[in-house]
Image (cartoon, rainbow, N blue to C red; front, side, top):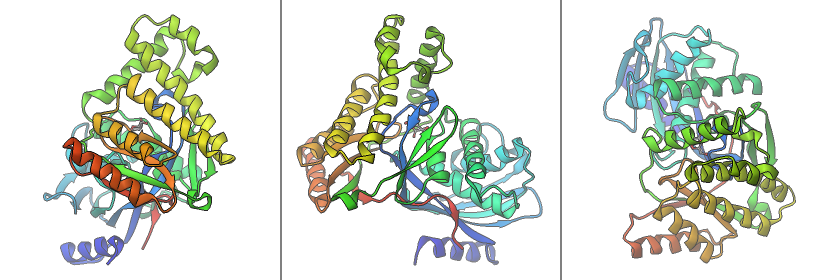
Amino acid sequence: MSLCTDVAATFTSRLGLSADGVWSAPGRVNLIGEHTDYNAGLCLPIALPQRTYVAARRRLDRRLRLWSGQADEPVDVQLDEVAPGHPGGWGSYVSGVLWALEEVGHPVGGLDLVVDSEVPVGAGLSSSAALECAVASAVADLFELDLTADDGGRAALAAVCVNAENTIAQAPTGGMDQAAAMRSREGHALLLDCRDGSVEHVPFEPETRGLALLVVDTRAEHSLVDGQYAERRASCEQAARELGVTSLREVPAEQLQEALTRLDDPVVRARTRHVVSEIARVEQSVEALRRWRIRELGEIFDASHASMRDDFEISCPELDLAVDTARAHGAVGARMTGGGFGGSAIALVPWGDEDEVGEAVVEAFEDAGFRTPRYFAVDASGPAGRDA
Ligand code: GLA
């Protein structure tokens, strides 16, 4: 049985009546452009085939009753009690979306909801954004908010989800993950410009070029609610302040060296070097992708990983080993993806070599005494929407 029919069946057995519908949203991997979103920069995610499904039914009161296949305890909360840090845990990502919709003046109300997910939690594949965006799609349709039909509405829903995550779940993330889940297109990477919110769909079908995109989930724990992510964000904001610009996006790559001489703190300098050079690498990657210059793309991926490892300091031994092993076994390019400090890496590998490269990583992890990683090939998939 697919997860879509599964959540609908679970809903009926728990509540004794059927859901109004089922909605889903994808996880994501970012091809390149890491920690650039909250610097008003560029990034290039794709939506994953793995999705989070919600079966939901509108209520006439303001109660939220939520069940999850990933959690033992249901959440039962009044919409008017939703606040920063409350109800906490996974329930914050769901109830935060309804809260954030009301913040921008959309009339919503109570909900019964069952969620289940194929997106691994804590793997840096945006399980939180997938959950928020599946819920946002459901609520927008159930309360007839007219926000799911076009990209403008979808961009507004993505912004609502970011506010839910920042304010109620209290994770100070940027907007890439929610944009990927709401605004992606199948067979395309999403070039997102976080300065003005505009998007471009860049064709991305590696199999037509004899390549596959491999995701390696290192299973090294990753969390965005701990201090490291916020600390990186604060350094970038400090750099922008000291340079007298509204964001690091305003520092052109050609002026990077000069800008660095104006920053005293060596750590802030290194963080700045990463962000400004990474934004330039997104532009270079899009060029290389449009012409399918694979060797060039591989070199850009390598440079991106080195920048995250050495300047932004968000890699970890597991991610470095996954990337180095994939490269040594024929990947044309590999890099960590997402927030960092654990989570997943991606590798572009010759089509048909996915298992060979994946198994090489598994073996290297075993030798190093790390947890057994998971790996799987992915296609660029479709955005959030209604399934049933
Ligand atoms: C996490 C955040 C995103 C983005 C990435 C790093 O996934 O949720 O907003 O900052 O890290 O690129």
